[in-house]
Image (cartoon, rainbow, N blue to C red; front, top):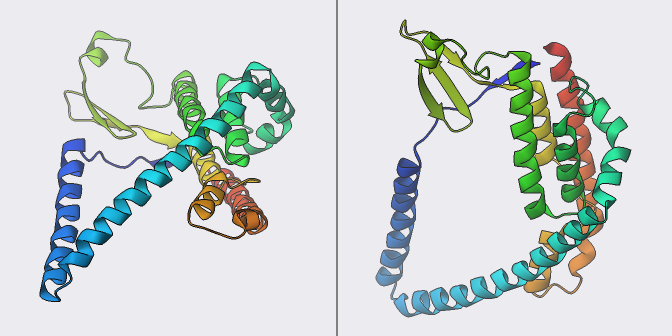
Length: 245
């Protein structure tokens, strides 16, 4: 089923990069001028060096955490545990995505993404999330949804394709446009992915440990409650919007 949200227009990467360069350059210039006016240029230099050192330490810490949990997930995948968990999740996936055909490849990718998010390994969840979106796009193509269907005739193949970030527009010689629109399943998956329940907030624990927290794992209980509520709200919202289509 399609028609949930029109995808945003594309902003060229070059323009995005230039905009960010201007923004960061402006912020740095204002900071330096402010420090110069108040006679604190020495503190700015010392702060920059100290922050650079902390950034390197944080990167090393997060690299270790990321490698450990991503490795655990890979071990589970090779041992068949992820596949077994995905099979156990089929009733839940059927409830969340009732319009996706049974045994469709997107379901396995969605399950893998959800498992990775629940155990707090967002880095490992990203490839599965991209794979899920790719399979959902193929599903829309199979359904014949405008904007997803590959052109068959010579006339259609001659169309000019204007590509945007997550958005494709096919323009015919008569000026007619077919805009690619996110399906209900895509929107629901994205919302659930953002609001995902987390049993082990690995990132927050690592950050708290890095910055000297007495009890880095103290965030676990509040994180479970907060993400449970956000996920419950996301599910209710997706179901309401799905019935409106």
